[in-house]
Image (cartoon, rainbow, N blue to C red; front, top):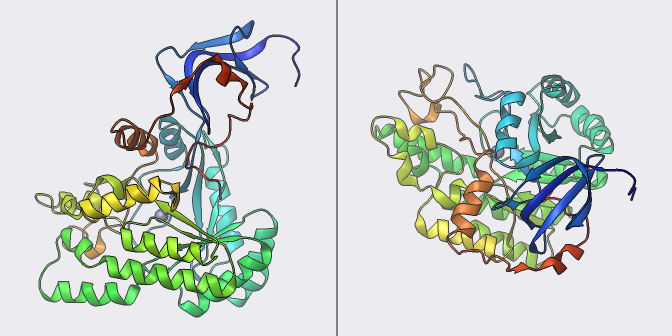
Amino acid sequence: MNDAGPLDLVVANGVVATASDVFRCDIGVRGGRIVRLGHDLGPARRVIDARGRYVLPGGIDSHVHIAQPSGEGIEMADDFETGTRSALFGGNTTVMPFCLQQKGRPLRAALDAYHALAEGKCLTDFSFHLIVSDPTDAALGQELPALIAAGYTSVKVFMTYEGLRLNDAEILATMDVARRGGATVMVHCENEDVIRFMVARSERAGDVAPRAHAATRPVAAEREATHRALSLAEVVDVPIVIVHISNGAARDEVARARARGVKVVGETCPQYLTLTARDLDGMDWSGAKFVCSPPPRDEAEQAACWRGIETGVFDLFSSDHCPFRYADDKGKLNPRGRENFRYIPNGIPGVETRLPILFSEGVMTGRFSQPAHGGASGCAAAPDAAGGGAGDDPL
Ligand SMILES: [Zn+2]
């Protein structure tokens, strides 16, 4: 540690939370790194008075969608500048958006295009997960191994969504490539055939309002797909992330798989802790705002998701930030989306509100115990306090 000269920055008088302790002390920064925790840290070029405030490690939101193609005539509300600005206001210093391979196009071209959109625009650190939507021989044989070797070590596959979903054989082949390169596979788990069956039935009955979105994507469709994805990962022996788990049954699949040795990371999101399917049942068409997949469930499933965090079944608390404008021809109320829930783009914003929601609904309500403020002795904590926040696990 270079102790020479004044510090660049001191954050003074705050209550500092590290991964292990909460205590009162000052933070000294030099050259962009935290070099001291303690009191009377000496002169600094800049001092921020954090009296009466918590000072937390920068959040890592490992599941955000920014500027992702979302179907004919639909446009996401954020670009990399606005998305990462929101992230920063929400206490995040790193985000991980997705690079979506378009059908018939090489993965590398998609990645280059995303980097071109992001470079020079981002106000936080960022990297990309790779979505494989077209697992051709070239994509799996050459491109993906090369990209994994270059450091893109998380690959996402979908079991649902027309144009994105892979069948089990394709998922297995993708998992196998990931395993050989040492990458992790993230899976969106919902049974596409169940959803198609339910959607067709709902349309025949004339039930096409936003609330039908939740009714046509039942817990059973998510639970079954979660079990199947975990089984496929078990066969291949690849680490897997089950993203955005919305309910207790899918959570229990994760716990059971982990108990039998599957390397699985479970993720949930604010919407499954704070919204229910009734929020889709708004006056006029306003329930469209809450259309996301999997859909929010009910209070019992909310409690199950909280329990998943408390018991450590969920390792990740991400936003699944995926914003669309509401009253907009390219957003939720696009011409077809105004008539039928099927055409309402799936996704809600959250990168800015993720950590505040966890604090207000988790800590302030007493669901999570808050460590007592240790005295000055806590300042002996290791100076790696700049790491990820609790529950933030870089993938
Ligand atoms: Zn997502």
